[in-house]
Amino acid sequence: MCRLLWIFIHVSAPSRLPADLARFGLLLARQGEQLVSPLHVTTVLSLMFTCGLYNGSGAFATRSGVAAKSGVGGGIVAVVPGQFGIGTFGPALDRNGNSIGGLRLLEILSAEFGWHIFGPRGEQTRQQGPSA
Image (cartoon, rainbow, N blue to C red):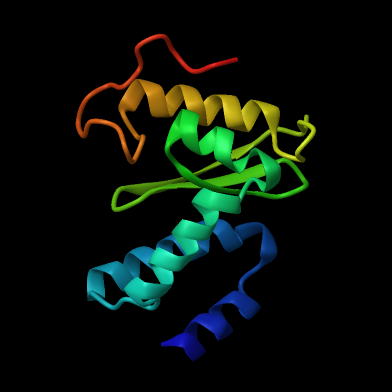
């Protein structure tokens, strides 16, 4: 299956790649095949949570409770384990090289929908709102 994924990635047009990969992931999910071991998933999410946002990782983890990885181009990929992944983009970066708008959006959504991994499950966790 990994060979098929390699061929798929290298043949697909770059402009269509994200949508095509999402459809490919859905196909694999329907077949029940897991390409990444649970140990690797745990390792990657742990690294994302503790250092995925460079020197801003600890503060963001405390405020949002979401595993995230940023890129210097303003993109952030965040994961709510066992539920979904979400991507944001904002070109303005903070002193740590993370998207200001992306961080803020993820903090607000986490507070509104109770995404914090250490917060109460199924409840909104916002009391005073995310910090500015």
